[in-house]
Length: 146
Image (cartoon, rainbow, N blue to C red; front, side, top):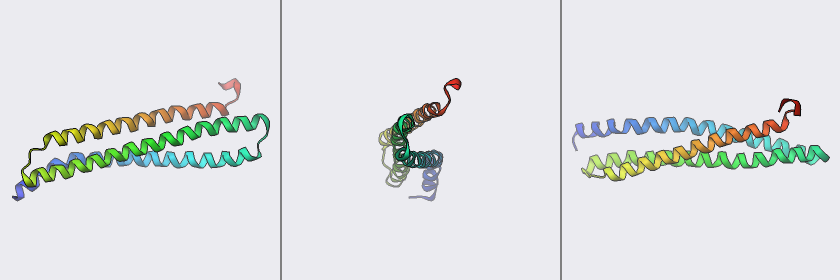
């Protein structure tokens, strides 16, 4: 393998590396959100133990929403992580293709499509979680403000 071939492989891998960086920031945002949902769930679980009557039903309603949200955020992180994993496989495939002079463009295209589909699913789940968080906020608003 010539140095020029290695430089070509490195240049090809710059785009996927940037994608890893961007998805990494999305994962950071989602894990922060996950932590906040977990903290809020713990707080409400303690409040639920001391609640009575209508307040207990109100807290239970919010806990149900938070349970769905924590599962959504976990799924979002999972799909974003799968996306990063697939990008890593793309980078490895690019180097293997260059080193061994293999024509594996179809494999790289398939990995790239799978990577983007995983990212789309992750972002869709993230958007759904954001909308669901509004439902929990509306539970806490007085009826006059709804």
